[in-house]
Image 1 (cartoon, rainbow, N blue to C red):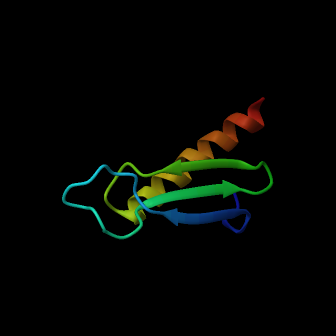
Image 2 (tube, rainbow, N blue to C red):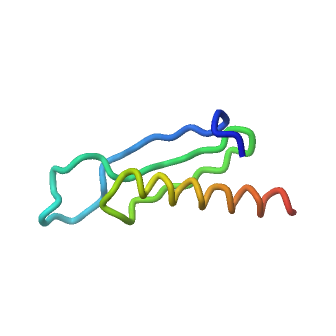
Length: 68
């Protein structure tokens, strides 16, 4: 996967409230333009970690797509 073919965007976390309300955008969405596969992830409290996990999930999805 070539990183220049990936669009990375961030969005606010979808939490119901509590300690982290009003914090920075933590959710990450990554889209692979050639295959149009899009993965969103907002499971952690670190945007960098969320981005890395989303990229790993995207690579797995692309590998599965290409093996079909």
